[in-house]
Length: 357
Image 1 (tube, helix red, strand yellow):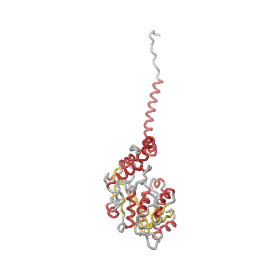
Image 2 (cartoon, one colour):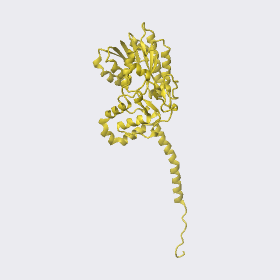
Image 3 (tube, rainbow, N blue to C red):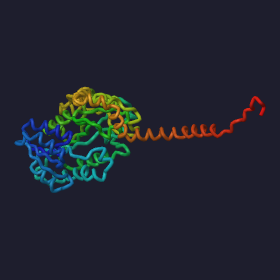
Image 4 (tube, rainbow, N blue to C red):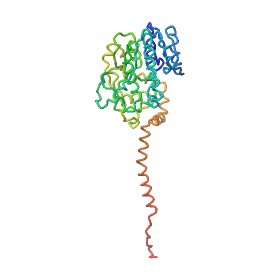
Protein backbone atom coordinates (compact mmCIF):
# COMPACT_ATOMS: atom_id res chain seq x y z
CA UNK A 1 0.00 0.00 0.00
CA UNK A 2 1.17 3.54 -0.75
CA UNK A 3 0.38 5.99 2.03
CA UNK A 4 0.74 9.77 2.07
CA UNK A 5 1.34 11.17 5.55
CA UNK A 6 1.00 14.93 5.88
CA UNK A 7 2.57 16.58 8.91
CA UNK A 8 4.80 13.52 9.04
CA UNK A 9 7.38 14.95 11.41
CA UNK A 10 5.11 16.60 13.97
CA UNK A 11 3.95 15.11 17.27
CA UNK A 12 1.31 12.66 15.99
CA UNK A 13 2.93 12.44 12.56
CA UNK A 14 6.22 11.04 13.82
CA UNK A 15 4.37 8.56 16.08
CA UNK A 16 2.27 7.44 13.10
CA UNK A 17 5.36 7.14 10.93
CA UNK A 18 7.09 5.04 13.59
CA UNK A 19 4.20 2.56 13.36
CA UNK A 20 3.92 2.59 9.56
CA UNK A 21 7.58 1.77 8.96
CA UNK A 22 7.10 -1.48 10.89
CA UNK A 23 4.70 -2.63 8.18
CA UNK A 24 4.93 -3.53 4.54
CA UNK A 25 3.96 -0.13 3.12
CA UNK A 26 5.56 2.57 1.03
CA UNK A 27 5.19 5.89 2.85
CA UNK A 28 5.41 9.33 1.30
CA UNK A 29 6.02 12.04 3.90
CA UNK A 30 4.86 15.57 3.22
CA UNK A 31 5.88 18.40 5.56
CA UNK A 32 7.43 21.86 5.62
CA UNK A 33 11.25 21.98 5.69
CA UNK A 34 11.87 23.45 9.13
CA UNK A 35 15.02 22.65 11.10
CA UNK A 36 13.02 20.69 13.65
CA UNK A 37 11.28 18.62 10.97
CA UNK A 38 14.57 17.87 9.23
CA UNK A 39 16.08 16.71 12.54
CA UNK A 40 13.11 14.41 13.11
CA UNK A 41 13.33 13.09 9.54
CA UNK A 42 16.94 11.99 10.16
CA UNK A 43 15.70 9.59 12.83
CA UNK A 44 13.97 7.59 10.08
CA UNK A 45 17.00 7.48 7.79
CA UNK A 46 17.42 3.72 8.20
CA UNK A 47 13.97 3.21 6.65
CA UNK A 48 14.88 5.07 3.46
CA UNK A 49 13.91 2.01 1.37
CA UNK A 50 10.30 2.52 2.54
CA UNK A 51 10.21 6.30 2.76
CA UNK A 52 9.95 9.13 0.30
CA UNK A 53 10.11 12.68 1.66
CA UNK A 54 8.55 15.62 -0.13
CA UNK A 55 9.26 18.99 1.46
CA UNK A 56 6.42 21.29 0.54
CA UNK A 57 3.55 23.54 1.52
CA UNK A 58 -0.12 22.55 1.67
CA UNK A 59 -1.02 26.03 0.43
CA UNK A 60 0.55 25.20 -2.93
CA UNK A 61 -1.98 23.17 -4.96
CA UNK A 62 0.63 21.95 -7.47
CA UNK A 63 2.82 20.53 -4.71
CA UNK A 64 -0.23 18.81 -3.22
CA UNK A 65 -1.11 17.25 -6.60
CA UNK A 66 2.42 15.84 -6.85
CA UNK A 67 2.20 14.53 -3.27
CA UNK A 68 -1.04 12.54 -3.82
CA UNK A 69 -0.01 10.98 -7.14
CA UNK A 70 -0.27 7.17 -7.00
CA UNK A 71 -1.36 7.16 -3.35
CA UNK A 72 -3.88 4.66 -1.88
CA UNK A 73 -4.52 6.30 1.51
CA UNK A 74 -3.91 9.86 2.74
CA UNK A 75 -3.44 10.36 6.48
CA UNK A 76 -3.89 14.12 6.79
CA UNK A 77 -2.42 15.35 10.08
CA UNK A 78 -0.74 18.62 9.04
CA UNK A 79 -2.16 21.76 10.64
CA UNK A 80 -1.20 24.90 12.50
CA UNK A 81 -2.40 24.25 16.04
CA UNK A 82 -3.16 26.48 19.06
CA UNK A 83 -2.04 28.77 20.48
CA UNK A 84 -0.71 30.12 17.15
CA UNK A 85 -3.85 29.11 15.24
CA UNK A 86 -5.99 31.24 17.55
CA UNK A 87 -3.53 34.13 17.80
CA UNK A 88 -2.93 34.28 14.04
CA UNK A 89 -6.00 32.82 12.30
CA UNK A 90 -5.10 34.67 9.10
CA UNK A 91 -1.92 32.59 9.03
CA UNK A 92 -3.54 29.29 10.07
CA UNK A 93 -6.62 29.30 7.85
CA UNK A 94 -4.80 28.98 4.47
CA UNK A 95 -2.97 25.94 5.88
CA UNK A 96 -5.72 24.29 7.91
CA UNK A 97 -8.71 24.98 5.65
CA UNK A 98 -7.04 25.85 2.36
CA UNK A 99 -4.59 22.95 2.63
CA UNK A 100 -7.40 20.47 3.31
CA UNK A 101 -9.31 21.84 0.33
CA UNK A 102 -6.22 21.38 -1.85
CA UNK A 103 -5.90 17.75 -0.76
CA UNK A 104 -9.59 17.04 -1.47
CA UNK A 105 -9.39 18.69 -4.90
CA UNK A 106 -6.22 16.80 -5.77
CA UNK A 107 -7.73 13.46 -4.74
CA UNK A 108 -10.89 14.09 -6.76
CA UNK A 109 -8.77 14.52 -9.90
CA UNK A 110 -7.07 11.14 -9.48
CA UNK A 111 -8.19 8.33 -11.84
CA UNK A 112 -8.46 6.04 -8.80
CA UNK A 113 -9.38 8.13 -5.79
CA UNK A 114 -7.39 7.52 -2.62
CA UNK A 115 -9.07 7.18 0.77
CA UNK A 116 -8.78 10.11 3.15
CA UNK A 117 -8.18 9.98 6.91
CA UNK A 118 -8.78 13.44 8.36
CA UNK A 119 -7.67 14.50 11.85
CA UNK A 120 -10.13 16.73 13.69
CA UNK A 121 -10.28 17.67 17.37
CA UNK A 122 -12.22 17.51 20.63
CA UNK A 123 -12.07 21.32 20.40
CA UNK A 124 -15.03 21.20 18.00
CA UNK A 125 -17.35 20.41 20.96
CA UNK A 126 -16.32 23.49 22.91
CA UNK A 127 -16.64 23.77 26.67
CA UNK A 128 -18.66 20.89 28.19
CA UNK A 129 -18.12 21.62 31.89
CA UNK A 130 -21.78 22.57 32.33
CA UNK A 131 -22.72 18.95 31.50
CA UNK A 132 -20.99 17.64 34.61
CA UNK A 133 -17.51 16.43 35.48
CA UNK A 134 -18.30 12.82 34.50
CA UNK A 135 -20.04 13.58 31.20
CA UNK A 136 -18.76 11.51 28.25
CA UNK A 137 -18.84 13.20 24.84
CA UNK A 138 -20.40 11.21 21.99
CA UNK A 139 -19.67 11.72 18.30
CA UNK A 140 -23.32 12.70 17.82
CA UNK A 141 -23.01 15.65 20.24
CA UNK A 142 -23.44 19.17 18.91
CA UNK A 143 -20.35 20.93 17.61
CA UNK A 144 -20.10 24.17 19.54
CA UNK A 145 -16.60 25.73 19.51
CA UNK A 146 -15.70 28.14 22.30
CA UNK A 147 -16.01 31.85 21.36
CA UNK A 148 -12.27 32.46 20.95
CA UNK A 149 -11.41 29.08 19.37
CA UNK A 150 -10.67 29.81 15.71
CA UNK A 151 -8.82 26.51 15.39
CA UNK A 152 -11.97 24.56 16.30
CA UNK A 153 -14.04 26.53 13.80
CA UNK A 154 -11.51 25.67 11.10
CA UNK A 155 -11.82 21.99 11.96
CA UNK A 156 -15.62 22.19 11.75
CA UNK A 157 -15.36 23.70 8.26
CA UNK A 158 -12.89 21.02 7.20
CA UNK A 159 -15.11 18.21 8.47
CA UNK A 160 -17.96 19.59 6.35
CA UNK A 161 -15.72 19.68 3.26
CA UNK A 162 -14.54 16.11 3.84
CA UNK A 163 -18.08 14.76 4.31
CA UNK A 164 -19.30 16.52 1.15
CA UNK A 165 -16.23 15.57 -0.94
CA UNK A 166 -17.59 12.37 -2.42
CA UNK A 167 -14.39 10.61 -1.35
CA UNK A 168 -14.03 7.53 0.81
CA UNK A 169 -13.21 9.19 4.15
CA UNK A 170 -13.03 8.83 7.89
CA UNK A 171 -12.81 11.62 10.47
CA UNK A 172 -11.01 11.19 13.78
CA UNK A 173 -11.60 13.72 16.55
CA UNK A 174 -8.48 13.67 18.69
CA UNK A 175 -8.33 14.13 22.44
CA UNK A 176 -5.47 16.08 24.05
CA UNK A 177 -2.27 14.49 22.73
CA UNK A 178 0.78 15.77 24.65
CA UNK A 179 4.13 15.33 22.91
CA UNK A 180 6.84 13.02 24.23
CA UNK A 181 9.10 16.00 24.92
CA UNK A 182 6.49 17.68 27.11
CA UNK A 183 7.63 21.16 28.01
CA UNK A 184 5.93 24.37 29.02
CA UNK A 185 3.26 25.22 26.47
CA UNK A 186 1.59 28.67 26.78
CA UNK A 187 -1.71 26.92 26.05
CA UNK A 188 -1.54 25.20 29.44
CA UNK A 189 -2.62 28.43 31.17
CA UNK A 190 -5.80 28.69 29.07
CA UNK A 191 -7.48 25.57 30.46
CA UNK A 192 -9.71 26.08 33.53
CA UNK A 193 -8.68 23.84 36.40
CA UNK A 194 -12.11 22.18 36.64
CA UNK A 195 -11.99 20.99 33.02
CA UNK A 196 -12.21 17.20 32.61
CA UNK A 197 -9.26 16.01 30.48
CA UNK A 198 -8.91 12.75 28.62
CA UNK A 199 -5.51 12.52 27.00
CA UNK A 200 -4.20 10.02 24.48
CA UNK A 201 -0.56 9.00 24.41
CA UNK A 202 1.05 10.05 21.13
CA UNK A 203 2.24 6.45 20.57
CA UNK A 204 -1.33 5.18 20.93
CA UNK A 205 -2.55 7.82 18.49
CA UNK A 206 0.11 6.79 16.00
CA UNK A 207 -0.94 3.15 16.34
CA UNK A 208 -4.58 4.13 15.76
CA UNK A 209 -3.69 6.00 12.55
CA UNK A 210 -1.57 3.14 11.23
CA UNK A 211 -4.29 0.59 12.01
CA UNK A 212 -6.92 2.84 10.41
CA UNK A 213 -5.01 2.91 7.13
CA UNK A 214 -5.43 -0.89 6.92
CA UNK A 215 -8.98 -1.08 8.27
CA UNK A 216 -12.10 -1.87 6.26
CA UNK A 217 -14.51 -0.64 8.97
CA UNK A 218 -13.55 2.99 9.57
CA UNK A 219 -14.66 4.46 6.25
CA UNK A 220 -17.61 6.81 6.31
CA UNK A 221 -17.42 7.09 10.11
CA UNK A 222 -16.56 9.79 12.62
CA UNK A 223 -14.65 8.35 15.57
CA UNK A 224 -12.98 9.58 18.74
CA UNK A 225 -9.32 8.91 19.40
CA UNK A 226 -8.64 9.12 23.14
CA UNK A 227 -6.91 7.09 25.81
CA UNK A 228 -9.88 5.55 27.65
CA UNK A 229 -10.81 5.61 31.32
CA UNK A 230 -7.21 5.30 32.55
CA UNK A 231 -6.43 8.59 30.81
CA UNK A 232 -9.24 10.63 32.39
CA UNK A 233 -8.44 13.19 35.07
CA UNK A 234 -9.50 16.73 36.07
CA UNK A 235 -7.14 19.35 34.65
CA UNK A 236 -6.10 20.48 38.14
CA UNK A 237 -4.62 17.00 38.68
CA UNK A 238 -3.47 16.56 35.09
CA UNK A 239 -1.26 19.65 35.08
CA UNK A 240 -0.49 19.58 38.80
CA UNK A 241 1.01 16.10 38.71
CA UNK A 242 2.99 16.81 35.54
CA UNK A 243 4.53 19.92 37.11
CA UNK A 244 5.37 17.87 40.20
CA UNK A 245 6.93 15.19 37.98
CA UNK A 246 9.11 17.90 36.42
CA UNK A 247 10.19 18.99 39.89
CA UNK A 248 8.60 22.43 39.59
CA UNK A 249 5.54 21.88 41.77
CA UNK A 250 1.95 22.99 41.29
CA UNK A 251 1.20 26.57 40.33
CA UNK A 252 -1.45 28.71 42.08
CA UNK A 253 -4.95 28.61 40.64
CA UNK A 254 -4.68 32.29 39.69
CA UNK A 255 -2.27 31.25 36.90
CA UNK A 256 -5.07 29.53 34.97
CA UNK A 257 -7.97 30.86 32.95
CA UNK A 258 -11.63 30.62 33.87
CA UNK A 259 -12.83 31.36 30.34
CA UNK A 260 -14.56 28.68 28.21
CA UNK A 261 -12.11 26.24 26.66
CA UNK A 262 -12.66 22.65 25.51
CA UNK A 263 -11.66 19.04 26.29
CA UNK A 264 -13.64 16.39 28.09
CA UNK A 265 -14.08 12.66 28.47
CA UNK A 266 -14.75 10.97 25.12
CA UNK A 267 -16.64 7.84 24.10
CA UNK A 268 -14.08 5.61 22.37
CA UNK A 269 -16.00 2.33 22.46
CA UNK A 270 -16.22 2.04 18.67
CA UNK A 271 -12.72 3.27 17.81
CA UNK A 272 -11.12 0.93 20.37
CA UNK A 273 -13.15 -2.01 19.07
CA UNK A 274 -11.98 -1.41 15.51
CA UNK A 275 -8.44 -0.11 16.02
CA UNK A 276 -7.30 -1.65 19.35
CA UNK A 277 -4.85 1.12 20.15
CA UNK A 278 -5.26 2.04 23.83
CA UNK A 279 -2.16 0.87 25.73
CA UNK A 280 -0.85 3.77 27.84
CA UNK A 281 -2.47 5.43 30.87
CA UNK A 282 -2.13 8.91 32.29
CA UNK A 283 -0.04 7.38 35.08
CA UNK A 284 2.34 5.99 32.45
CA UNK A 285 2.73 9.45 31.01
CA UNK A 286 3.48 10.94 34.43
CA UNK A 287 6.18 8.32 35.01
CA UNK A 288 7.68 9.01 31.56
CA UNK A 289 7.77 12.73 32.36
CA UNK A 290 9.46 12.05 35.69
CA UNK A 291 12.16 9.95 33.99
CA UNK A 292 12.65 12.54 31.26
CA UNK A 293 13.37 15.26 33.82
CA UNK A 294 15.41 13.08 36.20
CA UNK A 295 18.71 14.35 34.78
CA UNK A 296 17.75 17.92 35.67
CA UNK A 297 16.46 17.26 39.20
CA UNK A 298 19.40 18.88 40.99
CA UNK A 299 19.35 21.90 38.68
CA UNK A 300 15.57 22.32 39.10
CA UNK A 301 15.81 21.94 42.89
CA UNK A 302 18.45 24.67 43.13
CA UNK A 303 16.70 27.12 40.81
CA UNK A 304 13.10 26.14 41.61
CA UNK A 305 12.04 29.59 42.93
CA UNK A 306 13.42 31.31 39.82
CA UNK A 307 11.82 28.73 37.54
CA UNK A 308 8.44 29.14 39.22
CA UNK A 309 8.78 32.90 38.99
CA UNK A 310 9.40 32.68 35.24
CA UNK A 311 6.50 30.26 34.75
CA UNK A 312 4.13 32.60 36.54
CA UNK A 313 5.37 35.49 34.44
CA UNK A 314 4.37 33.52 31.33
CA UNK A 315 0.76 33.33 32.53
CA UNK A 316 -1.33 36.31 31.38
CA UNK A 317 -3.91 35.38 34.00
CA UNK A 318 -1.43 35.51 36.87
CA UNK A 319 -0.10 38.85 35.61
CA UNK A 320 -3.67 40.18 35.55
CA UNK A 321 -4.22 38.82 39.06
CA UNK A 322 -1.11 40.63 40.37
CA UNK A 323 -2.22 43.82 38.67
CA UNK A 324 -5.62 43.58 40.36
CA UNK A 325 -3.99 43.00 43.74
CA UNK A 326 -1.73 46.02 43.27
CA UNK A 327 -4.67 48.20 42.28
CA UNK A 328 -6.57 47.00 45.35
CA UNK A 329 -3.65 47.68 47.65
CA UNK A 330 -2.81 51.09 46.17
CA UNK A 331 -5.76 53.02 47.73
CA UNK A 332 -5.03 51.39 51.10
CA UNK A 333 -1.38 52.44 50.92
CA UNK A 334 -2.42 55.95 49.93
CA UNK A 335 -4.84 56.08 52.88
CA UNK A 336 -2.10 54.98 55.28
CA UNK A 337 0.26 57.60 53.86
CA UNK A 338 -2.42 60.28 54.20
CA UNK A 339 -3.07 59.32 57.82
CA UNK A 340 0.65 59.37 58.59
CA UNK A 341 0.97 62.80 56.99
CA UNK A 342 -1.97 64.19 58.94
CA UNK A 343 -0.40 62.98 62.20
CA UNK A 344 2.90 64.67 61.33
CA UNK A 345 1.27 68.03 60.46
CA UNK A 346 -1.15 68.13 63.39
CA UNK A 347 -0.34 71.06 65.75
CA UNK A 348 1.26 69.99 69.01
CA UNK A 349 -0.53 71.38 72.04
CA UNK A 350 1.61 73.63 74.21
CA UNK A 351 2.45 71.94 77.46
CA UNK A 352 2.58 74.40 80.42
CA UNK A 353 5.86 74.43 82.24
CA UNK A 354 6.08 73.72 85.93
CA UNK A 355 7.20 77.31 86.54
CA UNK A 356 4.09 78.64 84.90
CA UNK A 357 6.07 80.56 82.30
